[in-house]
Image 1: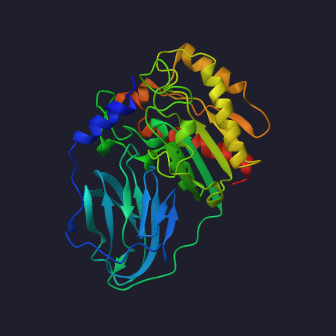
Image 2 (image 1 turned 45 degrees about the vertical axis):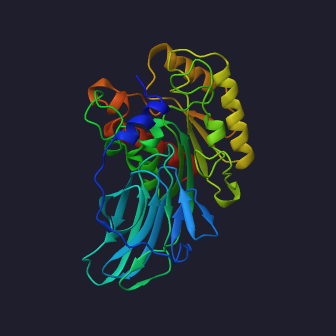
Length: 352
């Protein structure tokens, strides 16, 4: 029912995508990060580049003028969302380096632009290699919201197939959209920043398609700035969330049952996150894709892990009447319903 990370990557590599208009001019002045706000995990280097992989990673800036653009390099086609003053459109970044026009033909004045990566990590690394360019001037960046969330998960949190028409469609970057997930919708409604650490097919003990663990688990990838780079380590001091959601287990149960290893690895993950963010509430989310005995077992194992500041949160399961996204994943209806349940719980617990 689920796609393995390997199969997803193969499909992604051969899928063709349209891309936003760009030209061949490449900026050599580098990315400084000045006058912009960066949301997510970025790795900046001395060469004037900011590399990132996790879905939901975003760049936000204000400018005065009528148009804006930026130079982006990528080792694979990647889908972005461009939000200009609340008007949203797609941007397809192609392999290589190019200058991309993000907005044009605007009325003269002050504008707010946010560029968000929708495509999940896999092995695709995108890099900002210039600061934003405008025909006017960059202004001071917008203030960050006071609320912060961290969402750790698998394909459900990454937005796999959320825009698909039915369970019959396979993985495609055109139908996967992190901004339509329960976590992103909840963060938007609550006016909170969000860091999304999500990888399709991943588990706490084993990933989809594995009898025994082979590929890196969420415990390993969670620590990284760049999802597929074992030498890339994130400094947790750079972002301290007010609450953390963990939606891991769908792929551990891909055969319908697990051993105690799942529960033990979840204990390790919770312990690590508690050390990174002491005293912050953690919500263990029951998989909406699991059914029957597998769902009951996961919920029971998670419930056994409850303690002060660690809570089990059942956002509901996929209802057949609501339909499915690609490969039986949550569609927009299910993601929106899950988002509302999460919103209600965070408002009740955190006073938001």
